[in-house]
Length: 161
Image 1 (cartoon, one colour):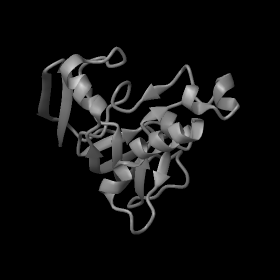
Image 2 (image 1 turned 90 degrees about the horizontal axis):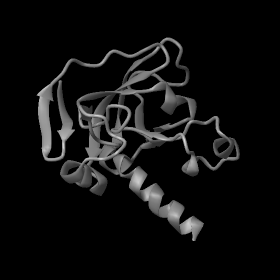
Image 3 (image 1 turned 60 degrees about the horizontal axis):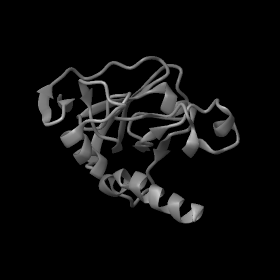
């Protein structure tokens, strides 16, 4: 498969890579769309303190479930899904209060986990345990679904105001 991998500011490469293997508590997603975020452009130019290269970038991801780990329930091959970008821990005080957006232990797709600028990506257990794999409703395209994350950011900001 092809991936877009970040090595350093200004050094992003399209490479061949094997289709990733999943653990029993993970899902393999066939990426159908991964939108480019303004943050991706900033990372390309400047890097990011939370990325340890080399890393497959891309955090606005939508696709089809290609494989389901043996310990994962509720998902089937062929399901259409969108992946959250910021991954709260689900266990800290803030998360337990429902304030997952301010989780101090937050990780991110495309930063600590390989992202969606690839033909396939692993949806890690950390995403699944916080219910961060979302079904794409009928009539919503993969391109629209991949833009759910920036749209959600705007809605969240409006609600906070």
